Amino acid sequence: MSTRRIRGAAVTAALAAAVTACSAPSSGGEGDAKSGSVVIGVASEPDTLSPLLGYGKDGNSKIFDGLLARDADLKLKPALAAALPEIADGGRTYTYTLRDGVEFSDGEPLTAADVVYTYRTALDAKTNNTFKSELDAVKEVRASGDDKVVFTLRYPYAAFAARTVLPIVPEHLAGKQDPNTGSFNTEPVGTGPYVLSKWSKGEKLTFKANPRYWGGEPKVRTFTMAVIADDNVRATRLRSGDLDGAVLPPNLAATFKNDDGRRTYDARSYDFRAVTLPTPNKVTGDRAVRQALDAAVDREAMVGKILDGAGRPAYGPLPVDDPAFTKAIERAQDLGRARKILDEAGWKPAGDGIRAKGGQRASFTLLYPSGDKVRQDHALAYASDAKKAGIEVKAESATWEVIEPRMKDTAVLAGFGSTGDPDFGLYTLLHSSLAGDGFNNMARYDNPAVDRALDNGRRGQDPAERTAAYDKLQRALVQDPGYTFLTHIDHLYVLADRWDGLSTQLEPHEHGFASGPWWNIEDWQPKK
Image 1 (cartoon, helix red, strand yellow):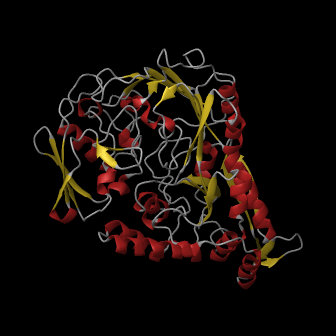
Image 2 (cartoon, one colour):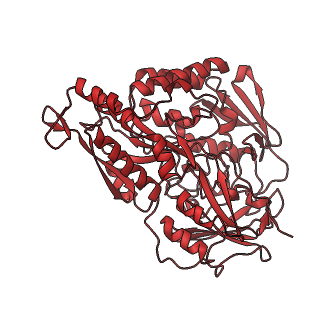
Image 3 (tube, one colour):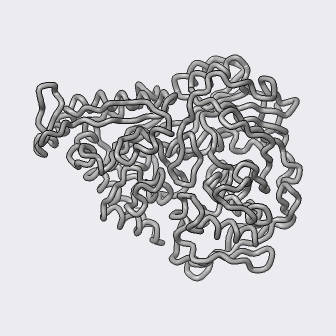
């Protein structure tokens, strides 16, 4: 998924065009603990603030709450629900009782009807989101009185409770609008700790504390997300005091290491960088080329040189320290194997060193988003490694407006990764039924063995059976890679040291806007 957009796909979102001269946030510069204001520099802004279209679907929305939320260790805890769900019928029925006295920020009470409306609308075929497949298990959702909600599942889904972090929207407002085009998408009302006070597209979003928040009014009274797509510009504005904090790539975060007034926060993540290899492309659609690229890439060098050690090699979509990771698939760069695979498949070296087969040169374009130095460096390193095997990769930068129409048959240096359960992210990344569905399955990958493993992993109840399914999936991906997996990256943040209570979670690909040390900004306290 790209990082400019917060979309419904477990994959979504990309950097906006570089903002090199945007005006200072309305706070007039640095926020401070005394006034209760914070200004954060982020690389992206959402397309929408409606959960019906995917905003906040994995938690940490400051405007909304889900039935459940996650704590610092990602354990599920009650939010709008008064307790964790009651599970019955062999895992096919989940019943939630709502917390008493919760109001939306406009003063209207939260009821079970709002929950039912949210899920039914999100699942409606007419609603333009790409996360419906994540709720595939839901057969029916209904209210039982004003304070109980009952989900009936088509099949037992071990990870279902974690899907109920989806934010709840007010039926009395959203229900009167088209969910795809209504004003609610940019003028949201929720039950969360903050309300949106202003959104200047492409520049900043400002939030203020919600006095009706059921969890108590936050000490941080206002916070602004300044949208600055270019990494270097974000670092410069942080250094000048225009920002209180920012998400930064490793090389720029390191320049603040000895700054006594700021702290660096390092978050481990499931966020990986990979090259999509679309099957409709005459070169990347050849399995031998995909296998050769997988063998040619030097992942260890990328971690060391591009990430300054702030990450790990990616041998597949799951990081090496995930309990479901198959350790047998770890592999080093092997240029000899890459060349042998291409030789045997009929890709023969030509005079310029680039291979060809049947008149087709082993050459393709690799797009990466403008302003993202980390992806640019990955793309250039990938192209260098591929050339050593006789494959020409032409790395090009572009905006996501240019990339999106081309990604159906053009390779992209993309970012994906979801926390919580192996099903989260893997299904949308790889299942053939989602090929070309927005940022889902961007490679248009189609492997029946992988589909079976994904279905078995999603529907299985026995942990050992689920582990076996994901083991088969990872082994199949080595033999038939639809992506070249490169690195899992750590997320680095630098913030002014004026507040207590900051921490990081294990993070998904989507970070900066929601994930980050500000995931719990409503709990921050001024330093004494």
